[in-house]
Length: 283
Image (tube, rainbow, N blue to C red; front, side, top):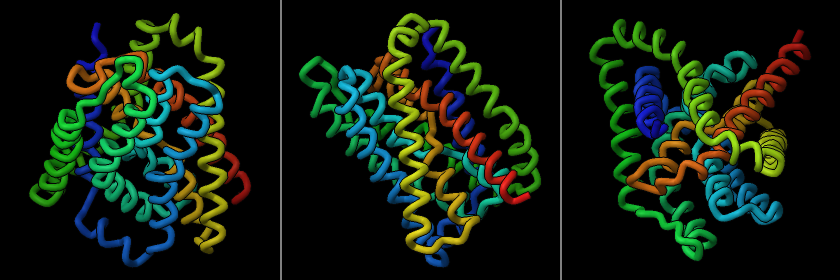
């Protein structure tokens, strides 16, 4: 079974569900809280990809995993980060704003960063990136479902709310199904590389949340804002990374998605521990 036919509908549903929860005012909130937004976007769009590049070099990852690690670092988390922010008693409105803005900005940053990473290590081993196809795929699978969700939110608010309740409950189980199928198909490659890639993605997550927390303190974000920034920077959209890696229109390489699979698993473990610590400290 080609996992692309599973991940593409999942990604489309997740982005549609994200659109159901967004309002145009969410994009304007950046002007009310510029520093928390600036720190989070810096962490998501610049810090995490740079750390991933450094770790990929440090761990001497093969080109396919090198590119895969940078890819997951370029895909900020979707609506799941809003759930984690709520659990951590963070600033949920800020989380929604960051999700909205990063979903748009990454339409342009992912092709740029991945094009550079591919030229750096991929072309010498036959890995190339059709940038035009990547942009088209992102527009169809990410931007269009978000816009349809926003339109439905304004045209039929009650229906949008009911649909969101259903889809939001489906998101995590669907991702688990995807990971399970992916593991069954690629278990040997995953097990052969889980030590180095597992360590690499864990270090990436810990550095991302540690540095983003420090930066939040330096600009004097409130505790709730700081918790949200940590979660937003640490959570990545594994479905998006898997879709780009495995799509026949883009990389057409399922092994490239292995860092995203392992990141998704470690991300949830690390951030659930973080949320648990935060809730214990507050009580």
